[in-house]
Image (cartoon, rainbow over all chains, first blue to last red; front, side, top):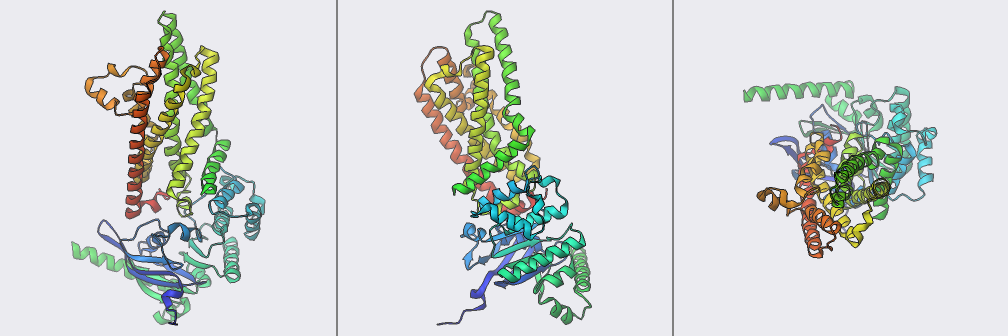
Length: 260
Length: 261
């Protein structure tokens, strides 16, 4: 029997992915292969194409070219069966504020066809240390509690892949640390694949086994955080991020200068 | 499939339980409308006009069926933008037909509740019995509900594409159709060129039919079938339009950005 290729083993396989809006190329010929159980950080300055890539992986934005395969299935053709096995949490999305935490989570539990909803919701609220918020109005929660309720929503269906868009933005450092510990624990125990975006480079270094640096829609670095920092001769991921951002801005300036 | 439809209906049930503004939509505004039209009608009767003026009350109650069913659909999608819940729904396994079916059912439930309340009030306050429409009530109700859903699909497509800039359409769209649907007057009072437009709307046949029944004539089943046929065409067109808008926002990347507006 032929040996499985890397793409066969990958839980997410992206090939030649590009996206342009009104002629402006936002993502250029991206090819990524993510093995099951990996925590992958998507990094890059503003406008690098991180969000667009994430939105394409979630099926919210249609790629201009290229293909996305998740669990070996084409995302466009098997959208629903893929979406039932993944989930998403973002600092920029919310849950209806005029509903209680229980109401919100039970609605999403139904959407994901979760059995034993009551137990699952209680278990997740315990896990994220907010069991007392069960009957509170979502709009009355602190931003830290709200972020954790969003994360509870994201774990309702026991996702095999979790997309996290700046999950600890707006959290106090101590709560952010506890959230990171919980995420790492879930990752260890259940082997959830995580795609992570964050502007906090220390967090990325702590959380991610591999990072992809994007600049102007292209992958410019790919590897374990420590390794790529060493390769670049930088002191830290943060220093490297700043250097890439400055180079990026310089390139944008020279491009617009060429056009003038 | 049904657990997902049920989830969306439940989401709106919870919302109405907690939101006085949403409850007012179902009860307060329709009752205020009924009071205004009821007293206008009572005044016209005092002027010794025939009992036929009671059709104002019937027209007002039936118009609300179309209005509620359209609004339930278009307001629901806007609600998800307002609370930034849009992405959460669209990355769940909920399909678009399930989402729309759930919203149509929410519209149906809201319009039934409003109609029952208005019918009871109209009977006690103005001695207007909606049940005098007899069997005709079913095709009238069904056609207005379907047309409300079809208009809701068009409105929802535009809101999806243009976001909050198009929110005024939720309330404005039905009022664009009201003068053309001959709700409070016969279609022949419209200028001839507008009559052709009016006759292309299923709602026109319902209000014409209602007046005919109230004046003692029978139900014109042929016209009800025509209205149903038109409704099916509008539903298909509404669905296609919504699908087209959804495709367009996925290509333009607006679906993800709507959440952030």
